[in-house]
Image (cartoon, rainbow, N blue to C red; front, side, top):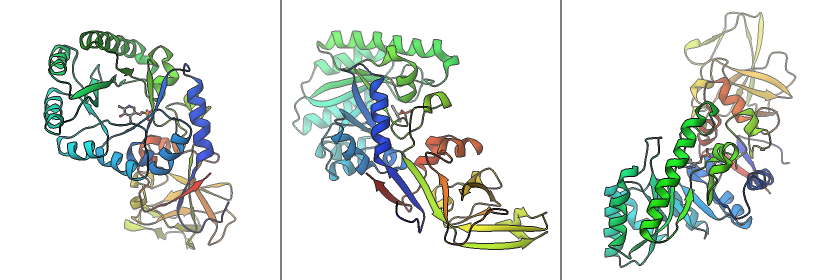
Length: 370
Ligand SMILES: *Cc1c(COP(=O)(O)O)cnc(C)c1O
């Protein structure tokens, strides 16, 4: 592995392959696999990851917003791409790039059909989302008649899939609620399919759903976080390998005396006779938010934990390296798959792996390991 000389996010495609195969091993052989690659594939590198997953014969992709799908098409991705959060303003680029919109309410369904008609489309692929309890996006059960009447009036669109999203797939205390979401969705899907006379693909599981609710795998599953190596509990994560490692270097080392302070607003004050600190070239603009300051977060240097001291700056953090054998230019691990996972680091500061990894900004260089 090349020597680390600046802040980098190393992305290991071998770990991605492992996670994909592990998750796939939980499915029946005919269950389709949709990879959720929104938000730069959770902060990793959507282009590299999607192209690699196409080589592994992935069935489908999903992004949150249309422009993320456009970027994938420009990178050469050819598999179908579901846009989870369709907005009216994006209809043009959706059609131009053969992206498949999720239509989640009467307004957007009506507007998209009108648009596709004006563009002389025939059986353009759309997806219909139902709200079964998350109360975020989606039609309600009693909208089925309206949807059917709209669909029966036109050949402009064709429903590729019907889906819903679980509110608490990782929380087994909510099992009764989750099973009711699954059953409601199945009933809605059945009545809608019957009324339109064909069977769209049905899907409801995210990563935790895949691991905790095999009965709900249906025709397809939608995995994001699991592909990138994390579950929503130690048990879920046990067989997954984090694909990303955030590494940096020591820019400068200081020695300070009792009563001296470190960083803005003098938030850290040393009460030891002697403290050694290291300044690192990454800060909140790189995705290490202020919540990791004042000892909530740490990095690893030569196998030892060095807590972040004081306030996280925009472009730098300072860590306490008292008692750690290291020098300027040495490698620093913020998170990886072995020493400290992003999950552990995030939990220590009161957040979750999703937020930490998706927040690693585009300023950080991505290095792909094949
Ligand atoms: C982000 C998202 C997913 C992926 O969830 P993970 O927990 O990361 O597997 C699946 N479905 C929808 C609708 C999403 O928004």
